[in-house]
Image 1 (cartoon, helix red, strand yellow):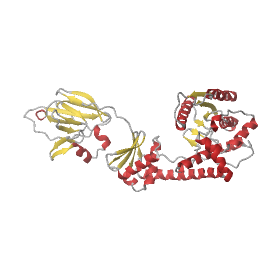
Image 2 (tube, one colour; image 1 turned 60 degrees about the horizontal axis):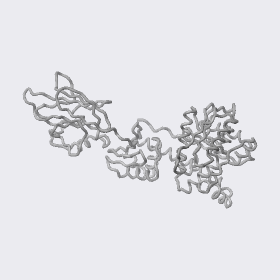
Image 3 (cartoon, helix red, strand yellow; image 1 turned 120 degrees about the vertical axis):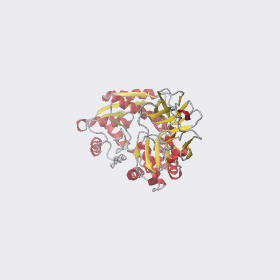
Image 4 (cartoon, one colour; image 1 turned 90 degrees about the vertical axis):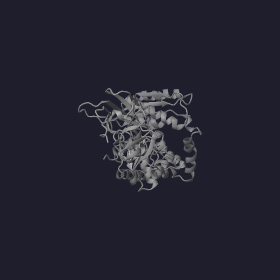
Amino acid sequence: MPRPPPARRVLTLRAEAPRAAGAGVEARLRRALEATPELLPRGSRVLVAFSGGSDSVALLHLLRALGESWPLTLSAAHFDHGLQPESAAQAARAAELCRRAGVPCDVGRANGLAGGHAEWRAARYAFLAEARRRAGADRVALAHQRDDHVETVLLNLLRGPGFRGLAGIPARRGAFVRPLLGFGREELRGWLRAAGREWVKDPANRHPRYRRSRVRYGLLPALADREPSVRRLLAELGRHALVAEGGLEAGARRRLAAAGYRESAAGAQIARSRLLGYDRAARGRMLRRVARDMGFRVSRRGTRVGASFIDTGESGRGVDIAAGLRVEREFDRIHVRRARQAPSDRELDIDRMRAGRAPVRLGGRAYEVRWGALEGTERWATAFPVNGIRFPIRVRGPEPGDRIRTPAGSRKVAKLLVERRVPASGRAAVPVVVDADRKVLWVAGHSRAAVEPPDPGGAWFAIGVHWIHRALRPAR
């Protein structure tokens, strides 16, 4: 049984005590990279997210300054959000700074970007991912530093987050890395001034309409007046939250493994009976872990809905926990599935006995149907005496009211499929063969109808329904 992937190593860059502006910055960055070599492995191709502001200019030149001691191949990318009249000029200036540094710069511009920070951020990261692909880069280096991290911890604290939010900005998330989290804004600017480096100043960064600007230039300075160590304390809170989050995530993975967590192309499945042995908070964390493994982020509300459904949901039912992601119960299994629209079903009518074959699609699953008069020893899935059926024959999915006559009496097809433990999500794909009177002749792979004995010497009509990827079980 496949096991969940091992817990990722948590990367954290510890903040050192402030030093004289620019003192030992290059050496400290080299030591940080040596301590966490997976952040920017030696010889990597690195795309620097370059705004032209002081942080990104410092990042670009610090990575260049590493030279032979930590060789990297650098390129840069600048995204113009197009939100201010002067943004095009700022983009040109950023590209010029890269040219002077001898680093190629890929410049992108948003077209008609609307919404707020979340939309702007999504557009920027989509551009960086595409720029990384064009550059063939192994990593995208972002210039967030310690003050950004502290501001993020405080912003998230005001939103009332869990440990994940209190942890602030991660040093690495996939290919996106942040090598400067151990440095403060002013010491980076001091290093730039000492080296005679220029940067682009964006007055919009101080605009009070932006929440981060209000925290950076209003709330944090006010808190620091009362408690000078507030930035250090917030940074420590972020580190403690990161450690706690790492422990909780490792615990969630262990519980998932014990609950029979299995992944597939369609999603994941977990034993419900094992999940019920944990409290609802633990179930919610396990659910979020599965969702993240599948590339989804689940909100608090989605987590509550999913955890509650695991507790009380009926078999054959499901709930949406995020856009494109659904939790369903099938007997004692909980499935987490990507929502997808199945191709339209195509039913099949057979109006004569002459042999033939044709495709049919039911519940998104493709089959080949073969039929004809029974001859010699050719093997078919099942056959019926012609005197007991009326053409045309139809192959379709189950419908409400379908019943099949068995030697033990008439039975509902829906109940038959439940007893055979066919998951609710797969019942629409079960082929049902009916005649012109809507009499169910065969529930393919599950039950064949009891039929009248044939006339002496009478003909038989044979039919087989074959899943394109796997043969059905023999007819019963």
